[in-house]
Image (tube, rainbow, N blue to C red):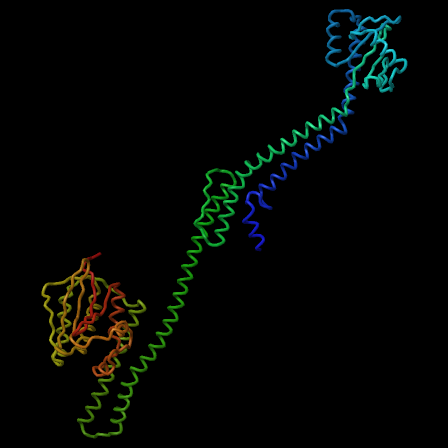
Length: 505
């Protein structure tokens, strides 16, 4: 693994061991080099035979043209003289026509006597060389003559024309092996140049193909690590650019899908946490309810048994026992009602009706309903608001909130025993505060005052028959209205507040 990483650092990706550029270069350069080697091999094996066959064909074609002209009696015409010169010059053939007594009738050679002697030597024997028969026709014969003195080879054709004259034709055979060597050397140079040119061309051409592929490879590597910021930026319309566009779409789809999966996973975790929390709340609820019902049930049972056994037979004692039983049963009834109300609010089963009403009038109604308790406890209420304050909320539920705040203030008022109710206007809402004089709530207990059955001063709560559910109902009501509520400590008291909308929006 480490070796692969080191190779990845030291080798350019375009020329890596498995790179497309390298593979294409090897194939193309192999084809070019193979083609050059094949040409050299074909030159060496077949060029000489092809060259010889071509020389024979030139002699036979020249003889046929002269033979046809002789048959038509055109040898001496000016037109044939021109054709005769073409045959000699174009095909590099020396021609001589001799009559029966040895006189040269027509010749293309300058040294007529010397050429005639060489022809005769080729036909009738060898002089300083050898002669081998090559081909024989109806009225001609071709031989191969080697002149050892001149170190030269010739093809010689001699034959009889229609008029009985002797024709002799000769063409030199150049060194075919030397020609093959020169040809192969030239092909080698051409091959080297072709290989170099092909290598340069491959680099430039394949770079245009492999660079986008390398870019796509890098993008796919980042996608493996869930990095979807990298995008393909090709602007062409070929297959690679289409693949890049599809990679971009795949990246966006994967990113969106993973985001949705993470959101779903987060919601699942929240649901599990909520389920655990609900389970814990259920257990706590059962424990608290059992604890709260235990005392009144014990009192009811005890006083009921006392009545049954006639412990005190006088009417006043019986009335006292009955009053205790009725009072404790009423406390249990009130607690059960509050628990049912809280349960409906927490599970969203309660209907919320938003309407516009005067909260000042509502507060005065609550104060009036609490007048007996206020008088019994010697508490004064300071509420100076006289103008209507219209708010948007559920009037019945807000009345219950204010009632709970008032009840809580009445039972905890101390020192001056004064309750102040006032407004604090904001841009789009009004804050309604209920402040009672008395001992502030310990700071550590403030977050818990909204928890069911939580009691800061349990002895005092038991004294006035509190269940520890009222403030939980307040928080549940305000949550159902999507508004805020809270508590603030002061030097000489505690302020509970809630906020309500004053606009219709």
